[in-house]
Image (tube, rainbow, N blue to C red; front, side, top):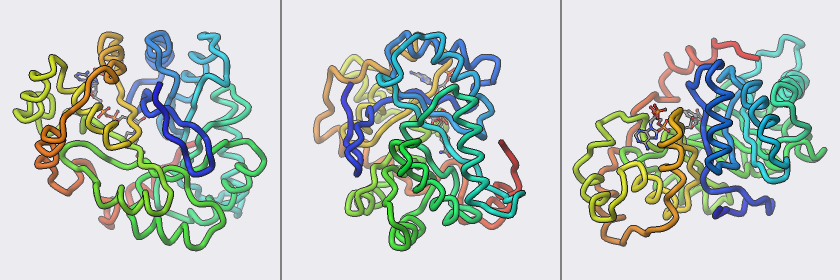
Length: 285
Ligand SMILES: NC(=O)c1ccc[n+]([C@@H]2O[C@H](COP(=O)([O-])OP(=O)(O)OC[C@H]3O[C@@H](n4cnc5c(N)ncnc54)[C@H](OP(=O)(O)O)[C@@H]3O)[C@@H](O)[C@H]2O)c1
């Protein structure tokens, strides 16, 4: 598997398997199928409610721990103990225990909301103790990302953000590259919104290569050096989504896909006060 090298030297597989919105009782079977198909990089989150099922699949697979790359995410801490730093450590320990692991490959702050500076300080400690090989963030716009970098010791290794043909994030990626932060796409297929799977530009390119639209989208992201974590509960699609290393898009095809960018989210705006309040009010752990 092709990897990217994070800013602390850790190798991260450029393609993994996401488990958002897979119901808890279906997650173990889905992750077991993904591991059997050849995925070695898994992406979950405390807020997905399925870390234990991911852990059960890892255990059942018998795959050596060092051959896996496991990411989970910290939900916004509400400081019931009065210390966001202490609560972050407790949330980390809970995630680790649900996953049945003794370290993580990547631990992400899920949302740029609440007291994420305290969360980050706790995560820096977890990293220094060897409990998280890399730490990073998710859903950070460039201004928030730069502020976090400028006022802390460790530069996030990764920023996982919505990135797909209709929201391409080229300027964000350029800024992240300058600052040593790896871009990772969530929602590579925009969850099928905007009729992505029948889009005429993507379909024509897919036809030219004898590939599917899904494969073209993943290939386009990988050629841009964006880490991808497509989700599917179907073993045939899991295999299809892994099979994206045997062909290459031309510069012209890359430019054609660039024209699909709308520059806007298809999901939600992290700067909309109503959304900030809604997300901030959610409780997980
Ligand atoms: N950090 C964040 O805030 C955040 C937010 C969202 C997602 N994520 C992460 O990113 C991962 C991926 O994003 P996502 O799950 O939202 O959406 P996605 O990967 O863009 O799309 C998943 C959808 O595409 C379908 N699909 C998958 N492969 C396909 C194929 N080859 N052909 C046709 N349809 C296909 C799936 O259906 P089937 O399952 O029926 O195949 C599912 O409906 C998540 O699982 C999660 O790990 C992170």
